[in-house]
Image 1 (cartoon, helix red, strand yellow):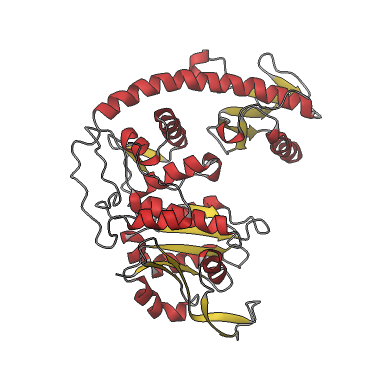
Image 2 (cartoon, rainbow over the protein chains, first blue to last red):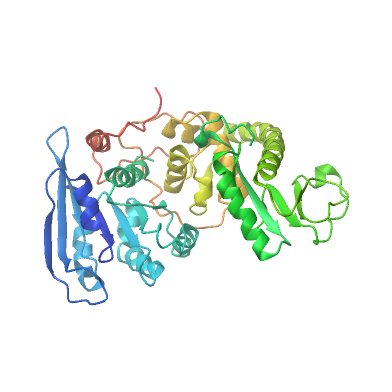
Length: 172
Length: 256
C-alpha cells in the first residue's frame, strides 16, 4: 500500500523546498521555464515534486508536491487518492493569499474532510497582513477546522512540525 | 528595572489587555512598550479588541459607574494626565519601569482571580467529566493563545474531534491542569463549546469516526455514549508510529 502526504500551494510557496527539507533522496522535480511573468521564478513545477522517507519496516512514505496552478487541478484529484493528509503552503506576499487558500481548500475539500490538513503561511516576517486571524476566519467560513501557523519551510524543523500536526490529527 | 520573570517563558500566564479612549499615538506607544517589555514581565500580555483581562483607558474616558467588585472583575488602568478618583494610574509620558511594575502588579491580581475562578471551574469540569462532557473547538484559536508547543498540540487534537478533558489528557500526555487551563482560556475567548451547550453546528473538517490508529486507549467512562472508534481505511496499524520514528518525533501516545 502506498503511503503519501501531499504538499500544495501556489507557485513559489515552497512545495519543492519543503519536500527537500525532509526527503532522504534529492527531490525529483518536473520543472520548465516559467512563462508567467507575475511570478519571479525562472522555472516552475508543472507536474509534481517527489521525495520519500524509508520507514523502519522498509515501506516508503512518499511526499508529493502538487502542481500549483489551478489548470492542473485534475492532477490534484489523482494525487489525493489514498493520501494521509495535506499541507497547504500559502505565500503571504502574494496579492490575495486568502483567495489562494480558498482555491486549495476547495480543490482538496474531500481529502481535507476525510484525513488531515495543515495550513502553513510563509513570508509573514516580511508581509504580516493578512494575519493568522484572517486565515482562521476564512477557514471557518469554508467549514474547515485545522491548524494554521506561520512557517519557514527552508527550516527542516518547521517542516517536521507541520508533518507532526498532520499526524496528531490522524491519531486523534 | 525590576527583576525579570523567572518562570519559563512558555509557562508564563497569557493575559490580554484592551485599550480605549487613548489618542492613537499613545495607544500605539503603549502597545509597543508592552511588546518591548515582554521579555521582562511576569505574564505574557497580548492586545485584544475587547473582553480582555485588563482594560487600559484614557483619562478622558468617562469613569465607569460604581459597582460592587464582584460585578466588575476586570481591572481598569487609567493613563493620562489626571489621576482618576480610584484605581491604578500611569502618567504620560509613559516610563518603561513604571509600566513594567504596573503590568506585573495587575497581572498578579488577574492571575490570582483567575486561579480562584479556575478552582470553581475545575469543580464544575469534574462534574462535567463525570457526565462525559466533551469540548468541541469552534474555530482555530488566535495565535496569542497558542504560545507553546503543547497548546498547539491540544488545539490540533480538539480540531480533529471533540474530546473530554480525560481523553484530551490521554491523547496529549499533558497534565490534567494544563488541559483544564487551556480549555478555560478557549472558553473565555469563545473558541470552544461543551457538548452540553453552545454548539454552533460548525462542521468538523474530519470524519467523526476517525480514530486513534496506533494505540487503543480505554477512555473509561469519559464518553459512555460514544461508539468505539472504527479503524481508518487508509491508515494501517503502526504506520503513524513508524512515521514519527522516522521523523525523529516522540510518540504522542497516551501515558501507560
